[in-house]
Image 1 (cartoon, protein in one colour):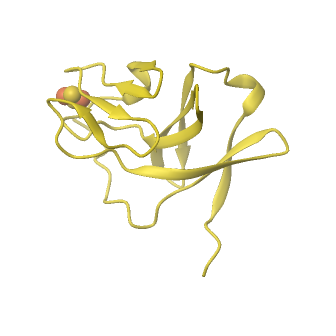
Image 2: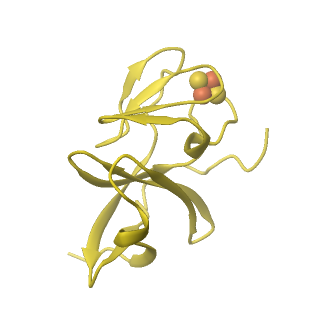
Amino acid sequence: MTEPDFVPAVPLAELPEGRMRACEIGGRAVVVCHSKVGVFALDDVCSHAFARMHEGRLRGTRLICPLHGASFDVRDGHVLGAPATKPLPAHATRVVDGVIEVAIDPAAPPQPTSA
Ligand code: FES
């Protein structure tokens, strides 16, 4: 099995629990979230329409879109609340030497780049 391609994203010390940060990883817009149950990375573009998820809110393990209020489980991107019906692609994370690293899911669908 091939090792996922992890890329440094943000120092853990710069991302306290409850906060999130937009990053570009391999040309993909990603939001790194430090939730109460760990660090996760999801696409930063909502699956409903074009909105940047990092401009929304992180409440526990729920990531809430700033535009129409859809919510997703930060752990795997599944939909928790309408109007979104498609999950947010989720990407693997790990922490190495105090730095959060992200590996983009090679199976993630193409990402829209504008509204
Ligand atoms: S764009 Fe996110 S809920 Fe509509």
